[in-house]
Length: 333
Image 1: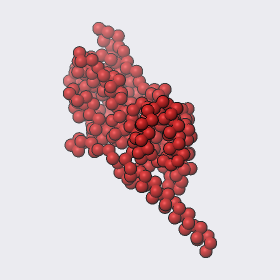
Image 2: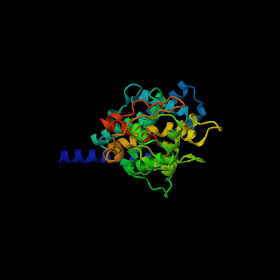
Image 3: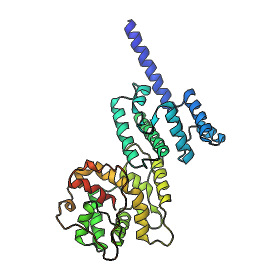
Image 4: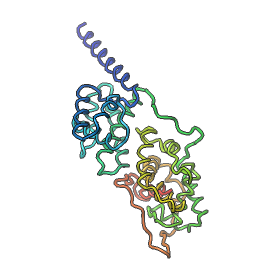
């Protein structure tokens, strides 16, 4: 009888914790680490970082926009409360400890995998944004676990995501339309992405045809988010991350449409395309382009080829052999 009472008490306590947490997460942008300790760390970090104290009112309402000050605030709080380390990253073990039994080993692994994917898309030296997005990834997954939905507006309902092979077919079609030599497609499949007029126009053609880009509006972020369905990242977070990159890579008004698509759209979206096709590698490696034995190389008689830098640690080793190069080709559109 005593054992039954203890069991019932533990179950009731777990239920109360679950309901309390669920209630907090219903608040827009609520922070799951709320409480006196968190609020003290938050106040100390605002003072330490020299953030305007008036912003505390915003933060106390659990509103954390993606500006630079807020990103560094989350990093500071994370370091203070031991859920973030610049070297080790996000402390998923602490999450398991703090939210057990709600968070189990399966959730812990999913969280670790999703945060790893997200951090691969970010500047490895930008610890503020890395801490911020790791934290947002955790919160998004926790909301999914509790079936609390999202405050993010829905993407364009008229957009239908393409299958990876459909995107490859469009790349091949656009390659023909911009008069690329056949051998050039093979060079792309081996990761040789050359900054030359033909490649720039190939990227623009494919992006427009896939309904992911227009010359007037640039990257169509709602459609891109729906196409990628990035693990652990809602549309608001995706928009914020991409807009920061697109602004950094904005092209002058004198740039032609193909150059703008290559040096802005491609430069920012390439890591996401790589991750997307890595997740779908078994399907896309069946495409005929990866069974071709054509000669490789794309040399322009007018200028030496200049490859666009690849993001650090893009995870292409997951393909192996011929597939290892495939992510670069697919990301190039």
